[in-house]
Length: 216
Image (cartoon, rainbow, N blue to C red; front, top):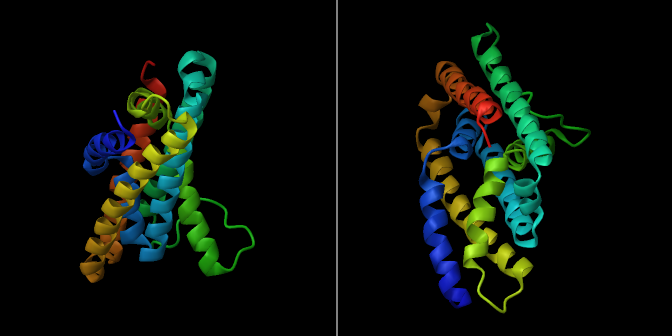
């Protein structure tokens, strides 16, 4: 298998995975609807950053450590599950409060200017959720080694394969973000934002609980 064949084959697998509705799609849609386009793109970039880190880690064997060490895997599982449950519960609490829906307390903003802080929070939301999801690492360690041709550098090839997945994800997220912009006036209403927060919050809490309880 040549490098080109490996990239095309992996692109097919990654493309199918990308368009299947999941946690990443829910986060990007929620960001586009309840915040703004810039925040949504920052969230998307954070998600793809996490994917790139996992893909590179799988190529050099870090993900293999998680597969071999039950303790390391369970620590990451509970950290990720706790983060998702906290994030989802925060969205649910805010959506049921009587106060108008405001900026999400997803992550601390530090001392950056308001606009940059908003983008940083979006990026950290996407990256944190992806990096704390061991299922992403499991996916990469199960697939990436299968698409690394002989006599190629594993690190470089792993980065290329993860890059393909990131590009496909960004293209899909861009379609979602611009699609929500077309219906911006309706989607940005307080009632709609609260409904989206409740749906996304429920998905996050459910995913976190399932992650914590699911056997390895």
